[in-house]
Image 1 (cartoon, helix red, strand yellow):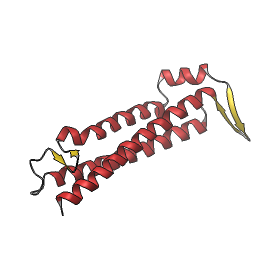
Image 2 (cartoon, helix red, strand yellow):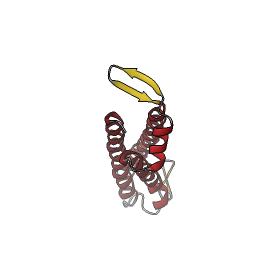
Image 3 (spheres, helix red, strand yellow):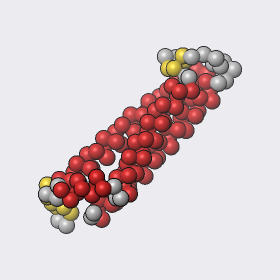
Image 4 (spheres, one colour):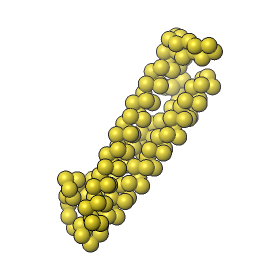
Length: 137
């Protein structure tokens, strides 16, 4: 594994952890607001389901994605090593930076993981804003 690969995967892991933390905080805010006196006992608030399972599912899926990103970032996965070894064909070179086919496959997978986490975080923030605005107004 190259230094660049380690830096990119660890940076991805840090961003992924930040997105999951944000998702968790906004989910908690939505849950606390939904339990307030104005909204307690309701199953649907402004079009969003507010059951405990409905609120925490995006956070749990996000945590699972972070675990997968963590496996890749740790570099201990044999599957990751096999991909890097088997697909050691240069596809991009610039100055001293060389990206192989295996690295590009893993980078695209990590990018998709970050995109999914971004969608989950955006959904949690929007849902929290709507629920908090309605329940605390």
